[in-house]
Length: 139
Image 1 (cartoon, rainbow, N blue to C red):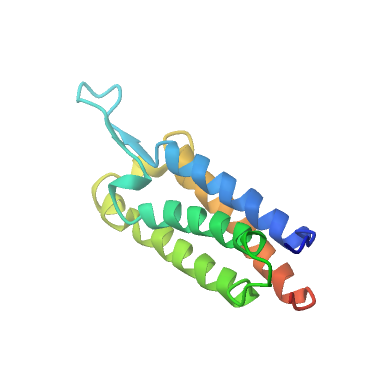
Image 2: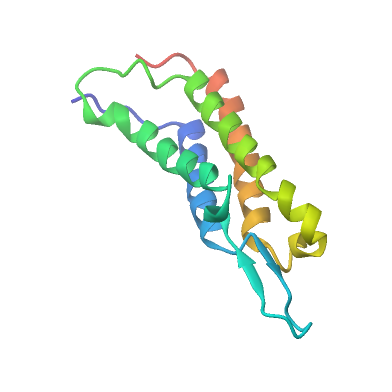
């Protein structure tokens, strides 16, 4: 089994994946409190946001994949991380489209901490992808 150091970019991408998982577990939308209506609370799993969660899990698997074999894995390339980032960003962009049409106030940072935390994770992920392209090729 080969022992390669993770490198700064892969550590950043793991941190971003952890932030994405936590962000998906927190509410992405909350409305109706204090109005005499039953509160509405939505999470990433109630729409296209589940893609963000799946991207976080796929990222963790992709980082761990080279350590599961004796040889370098061809899938462990910067382009793979770029594709995962783009898919995750698309899920985060598509999720609030119907929510914004109904209750725009529900996406305020105090009511939707998970949504904004997911975007922070995606920003860190973007930086990690940028650093992945600057690293020497692995394997």
